[in-house]
Image 1 (tube, rainbow, N blue to C red):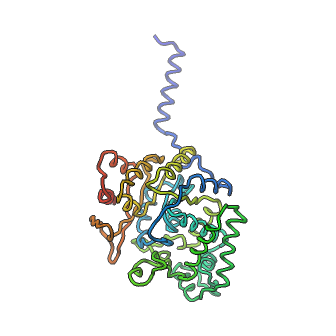
Image 2: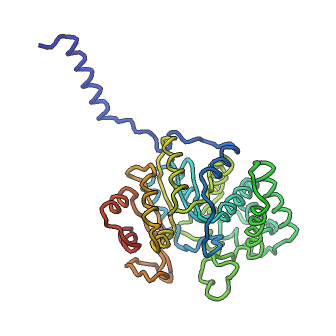
Image 3: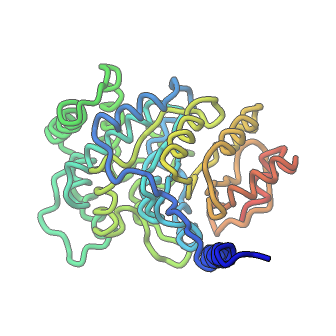
Length: 379
């Protein structure tokens, strides 16, 4: 027969178990991530998490995914704010970051030039209090004397198209970018890095709002790529704009991330053995999970070799939860793939959503052996 003390202890234990079942404590997805990184820590992450730079066939200064905003309503429904964002490529990442609001973002690209492009944007955004000032600096064109109110993103770009590029402004703005990175933040950029930033910045100066993915080979077949202005003024399938320049609110949110050093550019190969694994260790050490991983169409290239196996091994090392999501793009040209993906009228690409846990389960079960398998399982 149990004593009164034993019965009391047992009762308390049952109450504790019942309480846990009714209201389990679930830690926030970004529980241990910092609200801000100081400059030294930011640069330490850039250097220590990065791999040696690799080759890609295009400068890829802007996206070629004209439908990249179509998936944002779905992402807002399924992706939990907080946690970590992973992405690849240029500034379309900013739109996804503003949409899903992670606590910390890593942009991982095989090209060191992309890391430097991200630093260029960082400096410009920090220097620019509003959208018009950013575009004035980015294109080295005078800020239009009058802008309509309320200022839509389309009206903003229409106004800047009328302004000619200014060589004096270009030199002044380039100097401000380099000074911001080197003198203010104390980032250790080499002379080659500075030349690479100048090359990228000059592309925006020369092409302006009409800059396209195919720069500098923009004539002829490259004209089908969307321009920077078209990407920024684009919408989702219902006509709702979501770009980081769509509203002043979106831009202020992005500026907050940049001012707090929370968008960290990393040089890394998705099919390599270092960068993604290093990010995974950092996130685990900070009790954080990946909420969204934007992969563009990198998998399409990885499946041309055995690199896809290492990539999925890398993804498997990332801390995730049941809502962790991948966004990938599919193009209807290249590599001979013709999966049954419905594209909009006149569109050459579509954005697809996948569950990271479900994808890894399919990989472990041997159900993913080709790029076709990856695309077919997405929606």
